[in-house]
Amino acid sequence: DVKVTQSSRYLVKRTGEKVFLECVQDMDHENMFWYRQDPGLGLRLIYFSYDVKMKEKGDIPEGYSVSREKKERFSLILESASTNQTSMYLCASSFGVTQYFGPGTRLLVL
Amino acid sequence: EDQVTQSPEALRLQEGESSSLNCSYTVSGLRGLFWYRQDPGKGPEFLFTLYSAGEEKEKERLKATLTKKESFLHITAPKPEDSATYLCAVQALGDYKLSFGAGTTVTVRA
Image (tube, rainbow over all chains, first blue to last red; front, top):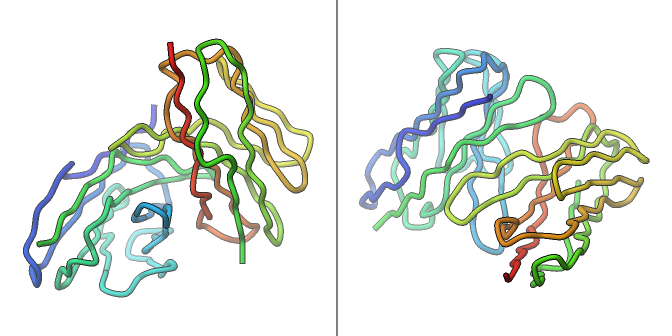
């Protein structure tokens, strides 16, 4: 069974704080992804990584950065959190085409 | 740009009342079409991957079919535990990302 875990289920941060969201997968998958999910907008890709230290921007990378130092771990960084980054953040991993998602982190920025 | 449209937005069913969800898509070249189930506050759970027109896959009370323009998710004799939001996504050839539809929220009453 594929297991994707995310460091927090719920997170509350202040505007301007630096926020780290961590994702770990245990299936030796090459590819990892960060999405955000908002009502009415669906899931949108922020960044993805196809190998260690490799990353590519998705559809909405502004205000975010990522880090992948080890194959199993992919971090999403909000350099200076803003209220419009309040959202559900979903991490996924894949080896072939099928992406498997983690449980999500619901982030509230006050 | 890849587009995915799901209908209806919401579906209320009586237990045992079979129905179908529609996913219409446009993509330059289809690498895969995916169905996920998402429960409130959780990450999407993978159901099916379909690769080519005419393909069908089944799992318990769910059956997914694919044509060149759309996919259907058939729910046969649903139970209350089938209540969830069902998401459809496509991946284009040569691409990593998934383009998601807005989802269909299914409520099954006992």
